[in-house]
Amino acid sequence: MRKEVDFLVIGSGIAGLTFALKVADHGKVIIITKANAEESNTKYAQGGIAGVMHGPDTFEKHVQDTLECGAGLCDEKIVRMVVTEGADRIREIIEWGTRFDKNEKGDFDLAKEGGHSEHRVLHYKDATGNEIERALLAQIQSHPNISVYTHYFAVDIITQHHLGEEVKRTSEGTECYGVYALNLRTNQIETILSKVTLVATGGAGQVYRATTNPVIATGDGIAMVYRAKGQVKDMEFIQFHPTSLYNPGEHPSFLITEAVRGFGGVLKTQDGEEFMEKYDERKSLAPRDIAARAIDNEMKVRGEEFVFLDCRQIPMDKFVEHFPNVNQKCKSIGIDVTKDMIPVVPAAHYICGGIVVDEFGRSSIGNLYAAGECACTGLHGANRLASNSLLEALVFSHRASLDALASVAKLNYREEVPEWDAEGTTQPNEMVLITHNLRELQDVMSNYVGIVRSDQRLKRALNRLRIIYGETEALYERTVLSPRLCELRNLITVAYLIVKFAMLRKENVGLHYSTDFLVTSEAAKN
Image (cartoon, rainbow, N blue to C red; front, side, top):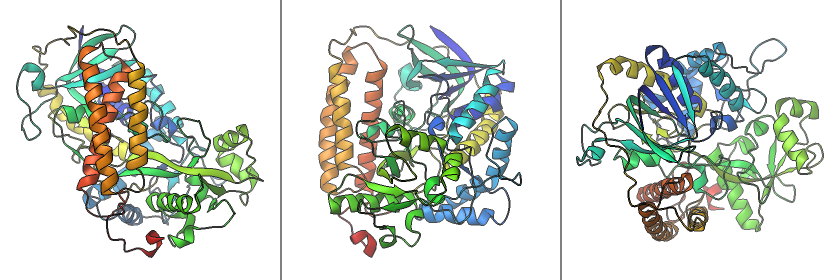
């Protein structure tokens, strides 16, 4: 079975939905998502969206905060572009129905998070991403040119490779003609031909054992584009959120938003002592890479499994008003934030690298765009500034839509694309092999490629990954496709890329920290 569409969007988060709304008046749009339409990384973004809406904040302050957090590896041109264009994009989603909290004066109740020099984070309680997702989906559902195909798993990007031509990573002129997608209701692989395709598949947190990402965050878009010989970059920069709730057995980990620290929450050891002043003058409001490494170091030195986030000094009525979901979650496991400190631990949260794109979201493959967490735009550098991700997604999906609309009328379908060939495959007789390989993959990455790394750990990880890869590819070749198998393949690819880029990075910068390199910071030595 095949479908033809002007614009194909893979993923239903903020980037994909925004792009779809902007191009829908000019052609037919299909959004495919492997789960329900509302299930995306966007949904779980608690903190908010950073934007300069009025004084005393300025574009320049936001630019400098982003550059400092990115540890010298941001593309300053991209940073200035996103920061200056971001306010208009935020106003746009407000016009589409997104609600943000306001104060008694009727102004936006702007929060301050780690690494920010001003209060500039717009939020809706502690469920900002869910609110944005709600508003965008309402607009999507009312547009006659947009169809949402839920429970469709994108398997592979279609290029000249599928027409029998050789495609290399150094090849010029590689083009995307659509995707092969697994219809999870019929278990059939369908061919979706498109003139323009946007990859907006989110992150890859499930490559680690402890992550704040939903179970769908398996790096599908990054892996697909890499297999299609597209360019990827900066995969070593994995941001571990400093404060996920320590609740053994829960997966994914519940996120304690950074805004709690911006509101007065203080990190403490299990004996009640503050420790962040040893690592950074901003203390508990230090950027995420510094805070996560500090927590990791304190746990290792003390032999403890978590630290505390002390919120007892925050007035309870204010805490409940601003963080109702955090409060409810804590209460559900017996934590009274007025009396008890919250046990927290770092967890994989965000990947700063991904599919290389230019200022219009164009990947190295023709007619293929990428936006959101799966894309590497140059904004984040070696470490993402808190709440810049939603802003980035809005700006780049908008710019990608402008570029796509300028070219779509000149593009045609490649009718000679063959149907998916599943001949010779059989139903897997031991799904437990997939489960075991996934668990082993997550253990390898958590143990050897976490917050602190070394050449020895990376080499050991690479050796283990080669074995898992060989076993999984053999299974892929002989069995009928399933989402679990495809996700495992994608996670193995992402894990390999993280290790590969980490081994090439010969300095400690941002989120990449190796014990093999000279440490200049006295705090980091401790």
